[in-house]
Image (cartoon, rainbow, N blue to C red):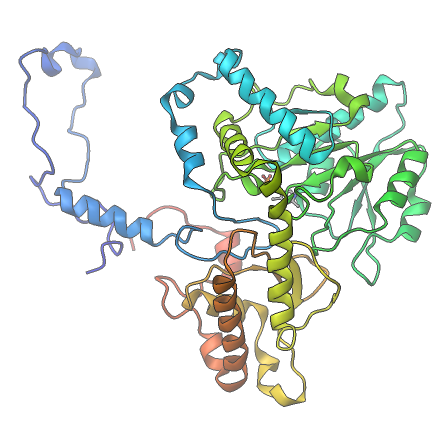
Length: 466
Ligand SMILES: *Cc1c(COP(=O)(O)O)cnc(C)c1O
């Protein structure tokens, strides 16, 4: 029997128990002390199970989850890197963990905020940060509100449009819309970079600014960024930097030096808080000197998720000034190593040196591998699960029909990357020799292929009796 096949309630047997409690303790009045009207009419419907049943059931459930502690997680645009456990220990120290959010002004807490502010300012070239935003998208909204406030404080009321590249992360246009800005899309050129020629005619006195990611979501460095910054500034706009995936730049290049005025970081991606599953996150927003007066924009009740900041601060301090520079270099090296090792079997639409991530456009199918014609990116991703890997990001960005976006992160050894490359090649071989095995994958997981559309449109998230 697999302990995850049944609900804990189905394991229940009347009278079975995992512990023994006195029916009435000497030092208390027992249930008699509770007014009759507030007592249950029926005993609570709790499962009656033994301790081993409980332990096996929940241990089995926990092992069904794929995490970066159980294997390699090459999820592009997500920076699913391994996070040192010491940071968890520091965040869990009672002196920190037991604080109430209103104790923000304690000197020790302030010292963490101030130290982290200084470290992030040094890494990004911004002047100061606000730590209120609790996610990357929350940071985007905060940054855009700062941009809007800046223009309005100068009596410049016409600036209601924001330029967003077609390669942008989906949260960028979403945050702009929530902020009440009108989104203007700028196209990428054939090389996957923002087209300066397409940008120029969009710039006028109604533009609040531009949102960019650099390296962009294709993992490519926007080499015209200084030119773009000059054009946007000349038109009176500001530059917003989506720094959710800062790994490839840490210690090498600073958004402030590229000409960006406002930015957010995802501490829960680049700075050592495990993420996925909805939180906790932290998307601190940094601004250049002239925007510091607007940093107080009110976007949350408290001063952010302090535990995430502790992890980030511990992480940065532990790496130190020299080693922090290795982050970006290793993230970039790992991505290029995988890209170059697989580009004969997976189609590489953009061949430049990439930063921390890159995009394949499905399998190559030249004349020699006719069989691969039928294999889709979804098949490759599903088959990877059989081999014990989390699938990469697929079908994003939308610029390629069979996109596979791979981000190995800086924490993986060459042996891990080599093993992954080996499996990706093996899957490419299978696509030619035994396409059925891909189309039926995954074969080893508790659930194989749900109907993806129904699962997204009509998710059933709680137990239903068959
Ligand atoms: C993850 C990500 C975001 C959004 O961050 P959340 O914390 O999920 O809101 C924004 N931009 C980019 C480029 C990202 O990778």
